[in-house]
Structures are given as structure tokens and as C-alpha cells.
Amino acid sequence: MNFLELAQTRRSLRTYQDKPVEKEKLEYVLECARLAPSWKNMQCWRFIVVNDAAGRAAMAESMGESNPGRKALTSAPIVIVLCAVPKESEVWEGKDNMMLDAGLAMEHLILAATEQGLGTCWQGLFTEEKVRTALNIPEDVRVVAMTPLGYAAEERRPRPRKAMSEIAFHGKWGQA
Ligand SMILES: Cc1cc2nc3c(=O)[nH]c(=O)nc-3n(C[C@H](O)[C@H](O)[C@H](O)COP(=O)(O)O)c2cc1C
Image (cartoon, rainbow, N blue to C red; front, side, top):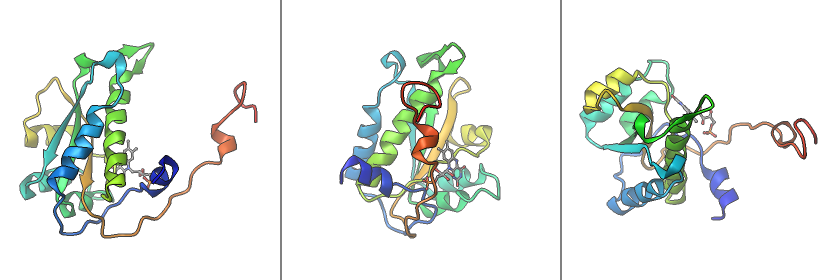
């Protein structure tokens, strides 16, 4: 699979088979996340692999009832929780590089999972304090996002994207 095919294949998947993820695949996706670039190479990210039913249920419970991702967290065999250590990155000219760094590492993980035939779904709509309490995350660490990880039980349906002309300019802002 070339990179374009990988990008086309990755979709947010919200229902999962009752099938475990191989240990080698889990280690592979975490290794791909570990190699992500970061602000001053400070590597602010931390990942918590939640694979027990009670932990996954607590992650689902941290989400609003209307969140379509909620059921994904209990049906998938693994939930990966992305945390970030603020003192291991910096805000520069008002831009929060911690969130950028953490997001890059997570997207490495998500694309690696896609390559391995696994499904994922970014999850951002949760109550941070509920996750912090359930997983013993220290007060000075932020909980950034999470994703289910497993074999999907649904088709990968593409969602629309903006046209190229809306997002890519040439030479100067707004120029086609
Ligand atoms: C930072 C971030 C947070 C997200 N949070 C949620 C979420 O809480 N629940 C959910 O179901 N999907 C969530 N999504 C998935 C988006 O809705 C999804 O990526 C978007 O609709 C495009 O669909 P696709 O990923 O299938 O291409 C999130 C995505 C990102 C990047």
C-alpha cells in the first residue's frame, strides 16, 4: 500500500469484532508512534494501553452519551489513551506545540494501525477528569485523545473533504 492508498484507507471506525489484536501489531503501532517528530525532540507524548473491560467501559463512560464513538470504546479489544506532558513541549507565539506533537504521534499510530489492517477512531469528546481518575494519570499531565484499536466490524466509508482549490494555494494566500 503506498501512502495515498493508506490515507484513503484510514477511516474513523466505530464498531469492532470480538477478536484480539496480536501483541506484535500492538508493539508495531506503538513503535511507529515513538518515532514521530516533536518540538525540540522533547517527545511529550505518553500512551496508555487499556485492554481490560472495566478500563474500556470507564473510557466509554467518560464520553457524552450522544458521542458516536462511545460504543467503539467498549466493542474494541483495546483503547489507546494519548497523554501529553506540558513541560516536555512549549507554547511558541501562542501556538501549543504540545497538542501538535501529541497529535503527530497519534496519527503515526493510527496510520500504522491502518497499514496493519486494524481500525481506529480519534476520540476527543470526553471528560478529562473522568479519564484521569480511572487511569491514575497525574494532575500535571493532559489527556489529549484516545482511540479504539481492533478489527473493524463495519465497512470503511469515505467522508467528504474540501476541494484541493480550497486548501492549497500557490505562491500567495488565495492564489490558485
Ligand atoms: C481531534 C479529533 C477528535 C475527534 N473526536 C471524535 C469523537 O469524540 N467521536 C467521534 O466519533 N469521532 C471523533 N473524531 C473523528 C472525526 O469525526 C472524523 O475524523 C471525521 O468525521 C472524518 O472522518 P474520517 O476520519 O472517517 O475520515 C475526531 C477526530 C479528530 C481528528
